[in-house]
Image (cartoon, rainbow, N blue to C red; front, side, top):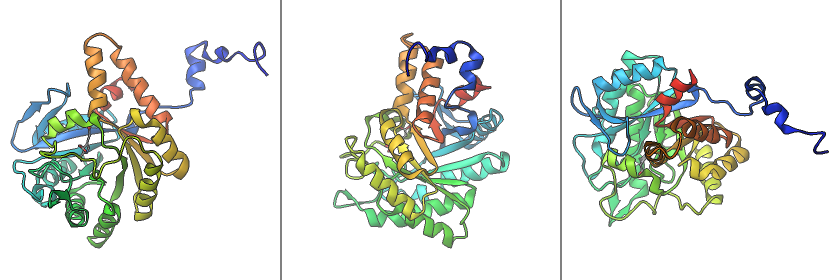
Length: 323
Ligand code: PBG
């Protein structure tokens, strides 16, 4: 059993052979494009650390979504940048907030595009934490009703999927119960099940102005050193009713992604986050790597490690290259 009877290079000799026996495929319908929506009209504020991405007012967001749908991208996920931030993140869970208004407009214009809405408070709180504070700490149980209200508001406005990213304990169960009570039993929950406290969220926080004003997120997001704990987090979220579980970031946590897929075998997503995007963009801009090849290699790697769906700021480019 070995060389010269076996020559693995035989199946690499031609493009047709390579394509036929490729183990992992990638298509635009696996991709989810993150978009930032803000108040105003005709607004397109470029985000310096995220080339090609901008904060968009609802009118521009709608055009962007039409384009994404035409390109065959599977879904978009919306992040709101409110006009007003307060202690309890009320713009995040108000039925009149920026995200519900954006969802309704996009649903009307592009009814066949699958709409995801991120559920969290950090973009909406003046302190920048993902929940409400009590004595300087994020109060888990006081945050759950607010996240539930947000999820119901988004579902009512047209979200097909709600994706809680706050990392409060018990939020998937609370959101599922609230959705069902409000007659939104069909709304999908994608839980950010294993979300790490990562330096790779830097550009996003610039985009959303959501960096915590004091302290950090170590009290609720996961320690990068932990993998076993990711399985516990995922088990709890599945038990609470998550339809899809997500690992985030993606590339630095492919081992976790693989472990989650092997252990549970459920629908799984991974988020190639803003810092992962920015690293590739920066190196490519310097001419140090080939942008298209680096992007496609990273996306295939994330799929290979077990992700069914991939959230990526490269969705538009990838869809074009795959066309
Ligand atoms: C909100 C949220 C964040 C991201 C997704 N949802 C920021 C954070 O946790 O600080 C990060 C996405 C990215 O970096 O692309 N909690």
